[in-house]
Image (cartoon, rainbow, N blue to C red; front, side, top):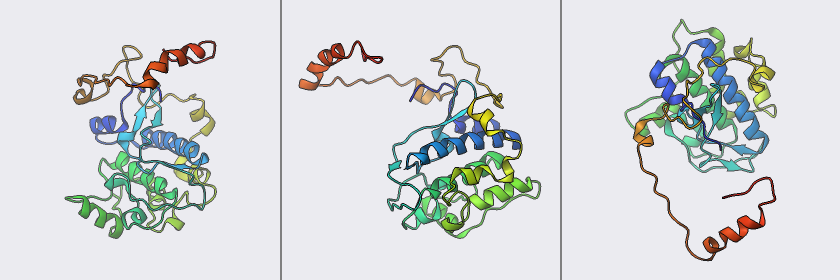
Length: 248
């Protein structure tokens, strides 16, 4: 994946505390399109959260960190490994049941709730309390929250995955049709014809100002490969110099 200089959605959310409705719609639309692309390749992410959503130089969101993703999961397929970040896990994952790609739509529901309200719908003092909340509690919505947003989140956070928005063969298409996205022109999002709510101010393509100094001040520790593969590397590179891509 290319370097995405705008930082994580988590960073921007922490700075802003929460987003307004239109900003949330824009980011939710970007995530929905990203999940559409992933799911179309029979991949589920399984660790969707603000820290794994990165902002590019145009202010658009890209899904990152596929370390917990799983391939070969199309509509109707199931897996059962308990992975993910506790606050964003679907109930069926927490209960160690078989689950489908609908777990990614649950995570989107948690993220949309968090973007609008600045807090997560399921909380607790530790991981076990969070798990209990996910399985037993229903999200609380302030009366001031947009009714279509409440409907959208509620349908994504259905504890029964068979009833969850996006669980049908239509997947992202069904999610995109929800009235929450009224006013979103999907082709304009795809083509980046819409100015993002926030466009990062960058001092060059390698600017790391939107990333935490805890990470950017770390020194790089490069481990040199050893053995025959390393010795053959230069010969392999020379063999492919006439191709469109060459590693130097």
